[in-house]
Image (cartoon, rainbow, N blue to C red; front, side, top):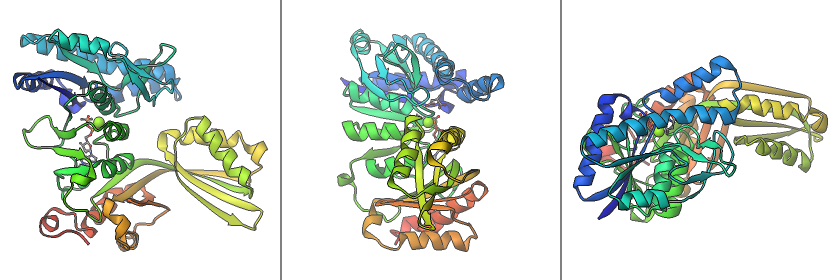
Length: 413
Ligand code: ADP
Ligand code: ASP
Ligand code: MG
């Protein structure tokens, strides 16, 4: 008998009718002879609505209480889906994150799973039950409720699949798989049959919201067979797998975008090695994820440092820096929101020069100004104005030969 972990995202469980459809889908997997563990998200836009409620009370809600609030969304879904399964004669057992033994650290709002105690889930499976686990939540060492960050239900699913050594983890969502760009922005995007863990991790980290980055990391580390497929149409999805099994290496496999980027500039810092250490250690202590960093030296004794962060974190980042004013004696701090990051990703880049040049040319021909750049072996990212992001994604998708018609006839060069 196989063991399958299935995850259904917010749109897939967005109404009672859809929850009934999900129950049918799970029923099919059971009838195919599998034990099933299910992970679900909150219904539709519930999480956004809960965030809105908190923001109506305070601009800066405390993280611990925020996590208590947000986890209620998933709790509704596990109860309703369990009822829908029971109505079909299937024994179903709903579990919150802590009941399912999901232990995390205590970084509210973006906690990491430290371990999963699978005893309770296994006991239910042994009783012939389907276990329905609330996604995106766990419990901290002190017994507080935590969340894994927006989109974190994918990570719950993959982590459960890893801990239970499931045969596969299926992520059911509102698109039919992983595409060469977000199909909502680029209608010419093409569904990939498969993608390597490395490329998927890069795309996810760079904003391709179809998978939570840590779910890819977890699948890669633990060798979990992972597939992204549609909740609504019955067709093959995209397998995320080891690169060795892939046929060809593309220059650029996909284009990702992130619309929530902010930039902070600290001007006139003392030019000493201690400056950068102090600056970035304090930001790390405040759990702020810094993305791109650019430094420029001027007049020898002073440097400017610019870095990008998620839009949600720029205020905290600014506060940390303002708190360093006496210690670092910089001249000025400036910040800018309303930015986006567009990126091209492909394992083939490392052996193909000219990708950066092509990317810059394509953006400049479209009159898109590049504010920051960062590169790695398999990606190039540019920060641009948010209102130009859709155009930039479409341009890059076309320039790298990823548009549907071209992609069918030629491997992009
Ligand atoms: P769920 O609620 O099921 O977790 P998400 O909204 O988190 O769904 O993720 C699915 C969405 O990811 C799609 O609707 C699509 O707009 C977006 N997306 C972004 N990049 C990609 C991509 N490269 N391929 C497919 N979907 C993508
Ligand atoms: N409900 C959470 C969110 O909207 C977690 C998830 O869906 O993965 O981010
Ligand atoms: Mg998601």
